[in-house]
Image (tube, rainbow, N blue to C red; front, side):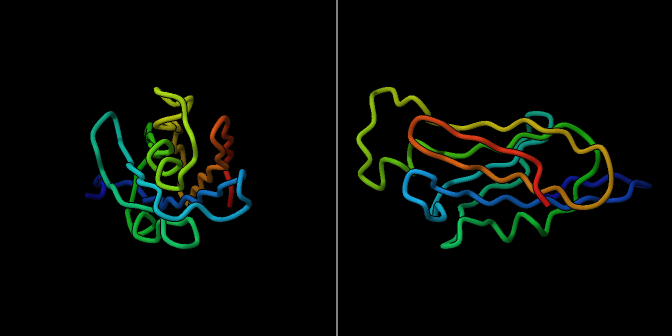
Length: 119
């Protein structure tokens, strides 16, 4: 489900989830990409914490959101979590303003996360 616009140059996107509490890539994290609130893609991270099929999408300028199912991932590892958990779904809202490649990594633990625009 790629977002396409006539006459615009396209942009690609990737992500990488690292479990900073364990010091390893976060495999099996469910990820969704939305554009203007509408789902464009969903999948899960591979053994290296990446989503290679996400990079195949051709995106255009606009506002996007990546959602990471952190609570489900942590529960599957046996991590004891409060109910409701401090982090359940981690949303990252970001904008694409130009051409090229955008990399949006997630550094995740049970009680915190960070992100940045990578390369």
